[in-house]
Image 1: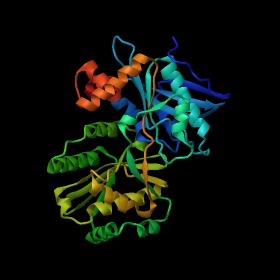
Image 2: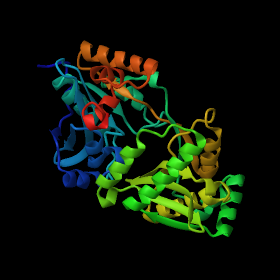
Image 3: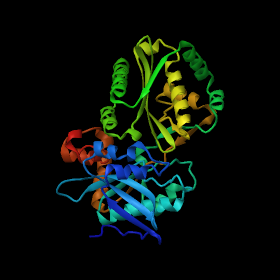
Image 4: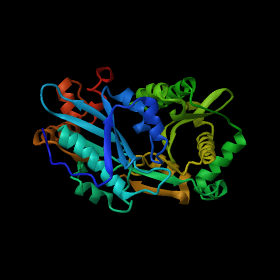
Length: 379
């Protein structure tokens, strides 16, 4: 049964869709500079009970890949396929090709929308300022933007300049705090082992309790993910301390040509230790430079709601930071029923927040049910 009309791929392009083994998938990831944590096999395994992989070839060469998480509702033909921070289409041995991106999203729509009748939701790693106009390309390939979700904003720091140049362009306050941290001679530990991650989680929970925040529901997920990731993909944790007491900690994912700052925490002891966070971030930047990482995504800013973290990140990046908006999420629908169900779920989610009952949760949280309903243990 055909749910929507497919668009043929250009001559020379073919696809393969299958659930690849973890070693095979990660060998493919290594070839892409836009590889990221959310496209790792382990992330699919931890957050979903059903995921698959699409491989796009040009003749015999693999030119794009995507990991797709899938969930369906029981009894009715409604489901969603979700590609988070994909597809991957920037190979390390070739200059980026816009046509490869076009063929990749066309192949994804043909398979999951036209053949399977699902709603396909893409969240690509693209920014509004990217050229050419990727939103137009997505529109030409029958994807519509989800304007109701708003636009996520971040700062991307260019790490290609020398360390001296990066330091020279730090914000004045940031530079003073870094000097204070250097004079204090903090101890810094760095690792990807589970004990170091557990130490960070304890620090984070202390901070959450102190600030009366709600703990993010994905912290435990990321801890489970760290256990599942192969060594070359594990997140890097760095912790600064003094006198045997941890003061500040950060968690970063380092894959492809980009590092992503995921979590940060400062303990009560760290509040009295000037420069403990600054020296830690500078330590991480030096580490990223040694690895040849080209850019550092500081992972989310909101100058209005969170002016303090915004200033910290903006001053860290200095003149080498670019304030960008993600292009956003895009949907393609296999039928009017799936369009209506997902749209209704989005409205319900915004109106009522998190709900916890089977089908209602699936409709109310169409992306999150890929993470939850598809695997009951995550409810």
